Length: 617
Image 1: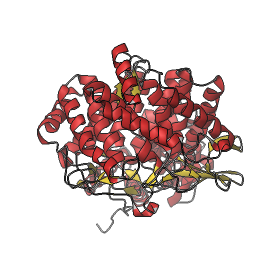
Image 2: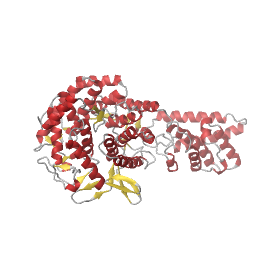
Image 3: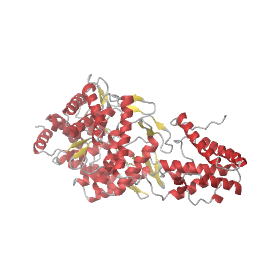
Image 4: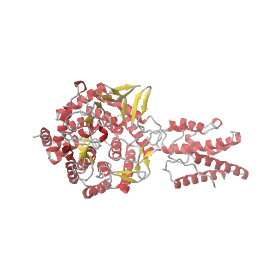
């Protein structure tokens, strides 16, 4: 009566589930014991069974607890099979641990083994019971048996994988609408909400994902909220950059896919209210944060009140598309002027194509010399090539800037270490190289592959993309959890983790999507599926969604946040990796940096209008 399982305090396994599991185990052991013919033997075996049960549930109380050190190398075993094997291993180990390995007790352990279901015995066949004297021995033996066994989850057909990914998106969407409908983000553990864009961020970011995955009822539900409740001009301080790529981009994509003009009208309203940010600086750049009602804007204090490259230079996709669809030339002209200004920055010719992360808000001047393809730089470089593709490959400035960027990146930022190619940081003022790579920079393989696919680079670019892709994938293989740290460093004998959190980020699966579509190498689909399984295993909050993880080495430590890009980007790219190539075809669509697809501008009249708008005519 006094026995209680020692629960590990990660908070995700209810007492009700624990009682059910204990009860099922007890019944199974009791039924086995009652098969014994002699009363004396029944008593002895029943006592041993209780000891086994106590051992199992006191040592392994929760299904989501961190695995013991001896089990770390089993990380690639599928969750369901791992659970069955663990039960078998712990049953044998428990019996062996309680008493000396005499023949009579070995017989008892063998009987326990024989009582297991056939599917479990198949995995533990040919156990040499005489040499297994501990849990570690049993677990290691089982690992060798199952390591080469066929993985049922890996053998799923592509349609089944699509169903799994769709179901995951549906669960996250239902969790959001249940607890946080109309708010920006869901905190899936506490079931509370977070607002920082103040325009239903997750809802609008998810629109095109719902459409692509065929969740049309949910799309209609979201559409009703946008039509009736979206405030396109909130009296709040907004991020110009995030609101543009997520809200405007999400609404434009919803219009492009559904043809519903309400979405286009809302996108136009949102961006007109945001563009007051251009009036809050003394140059041609938008301020970082703006209140569209009061017109008050500011740049973050932690940058020394500098503007940030990615926030200033990531709007060409949204602005070109808005000009095309609304016949308002101002959007395209504004984004083009920004790129012209950046092209004129005072940068040594040898570093041409690399743009510092901090910019002045008073004149066209850089405020530092740091170059980054991760945070603060990433999406600007991505938009060089995508703007050129979107605008019909008819704006030479965009092509030249992209090629200058790629060549300068190859010369100054690409290094190899222990056979791994990586993309580090660089300072153009002192020449200092930083051997630190963020997960955010893992969009680069996809960017290079896309550029090659569109005829903007040689085969060498695709080869480099695949080498960098290998490094990004290796980040997911650093820990048994199969989750990648947010950043890594290179030095000494190996790649080592730097930021250990996992934030459901999309960049690696984004590049896997492009490389699959462009090369059709099966390994990219296989890797994408492995990443999905790892995320689903360690980040899932049952019935609600998925959360960030604080430490990829201890995935039971969750961070109570499900950012909107989980549905908007990560799940969308995973889904499209297993879809037919003609679903959101690269020949027809360009993705913005939040994975919102918009159609390429291909109509001759539209291209003529865009060219005129860019020129200021």
